[in-house]
Amino acid sequence: MIYADNAATTKLAPEVFEEMKEYLLESYGNPSQPYNFSRKVKRAIQEARNTIADCIGADFEEILFTSCGTESDNWAVNSGMGGHGSIITSSIEHHAILESCKAAEKSGRTVKFMPVDGLGLIDLSWLKDNISDTDSLVSVMYANNEIGTIQPIDEIASIAHRYGCLFHTDAVQAVGHITINVHKSKIDLLSASAHKFNGPKGVGFLYAKRGLSIDPYINGGGQEFGMRAGTENVASIVGMAKALDTNCKEMEHNKKHLLSLEKELLKGLRQAGIDFMRNGSDHHIPGNVSLSFNGIDGEMLLHRLDLMGICVSTGSACDSQRTQLSHVLRAIDIPEEYAFGTIRISLGKYNTFEDVITIVKAIKKILG
Ligand code: PLP
Image 1 (cartoon, helix red, strand yellow):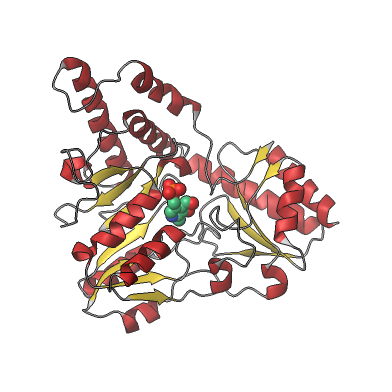
Image 2 (image 1 turned 90 degrees about the horizontal axis):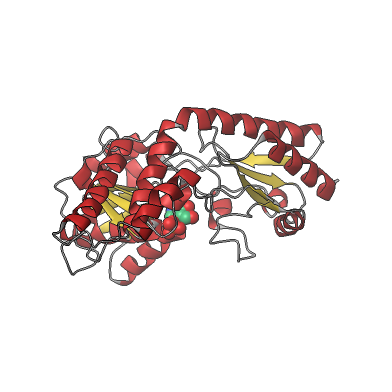
């Protein structure tokens, strides 16, 4: 089997699993208890918080553990200035943001959607022309899950702040893959999810700038500084920190590896004389390759590749059950004859040149 759907989820790194085991089998004490057996567990959570903060240029008390990227996104949208005022977001956000915004609209908030260009980059002049003092939150994803495009985050944050808005970024596809410094970029809120960077599923975090007045997400005990009650998912938190630390240390190596795999993939398809276009910007998440094949049914291509033991996606994991064009492909306005023939091959650090050669051969066989 060749797994090339790393934007949907990644394989748990073996060293991460090793680190987690202790907190499942041996150090299982409740971190809130005062005895020595539990103090070790509490310390492990503190260390994980410190490690994660270091990886994104934050301070430890700015990291709040959550159950996934979706939860972090929901929290951020509902917390901008206490959950009041208008929201500005982009037309290519993940459903975790789009649906949170829809719910906010139902409770009376106005939501404005920024358009993007053909590369998936948001229109900064639209933002400058449409933002106003009545807006409270600007939420733009760091990198898109379907096409990999990385947004000009620092500029967006600076425009948002000029109008007194908080700036949130859904960085689920970016954290652990590209360098992020929340303080330097002046980000107020950032969402991340461990399973996108070789950590376990069911754990994520929300970075919330110190001093920000956000509402608690779950009321109860004092966990997560009283902001998200409930006994911590200790093993997963420890695993997430190990995964992020490892990926940040390996980042330059992984980037180089993934960009050379991408090059090989595109070269192979071109040499095979296949008519396709690559979607997204040159400044993208390494390994995220969205391809649109002329006159081909993307669903058919996905299923034929599946029969050959190759996992890819037609769009975002959440969209792959739907047959219509995804909102992202619609927003970047690719020609219809190509749009329906879109697949996303998202390569990860465990993919090899042999994998890419096999994928090219398989596509050639199916389309040839
Ligand atoms: N945001 C983006 C950009 C994503 O790609 C995803 C997952 O695909 C999510 C949010 C949701 O993350 P999770 O699966 O951890 O809830």
